Length: 136
Image 1 (cartoon, rainbow, N blue to C red):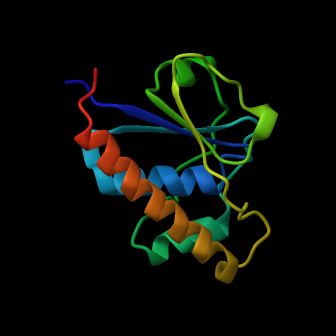
Image 2: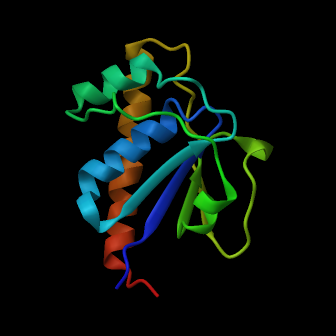
């Protein structure tokens, strides 16, 4: 059985997708491969997202925003977009989910905590689904 690969995509790859990738790596360990990218990546991760994740015991300080590539999508079993609209390409044959989450950009920690917590809840459900469903 091969490990499933999940790709998280948001425009800047600096907040939501980085938090989701951090949670998935933390909760699934080496049972799921994790990628994240953005259609227009920033130079660094949102420091408030880093702070919010640190409060949850997860260090994402060494992650860097990456540009979305065709190769990353092709290598992924599940592609989860987060508010990138038409800026994220669609590939037939992939499992897609679009998570409607507020953008943490420009928000303070009080506003980012609920976004972080919603992402964690969704990641916990995703881990259960991927690890309980036999992979083809």
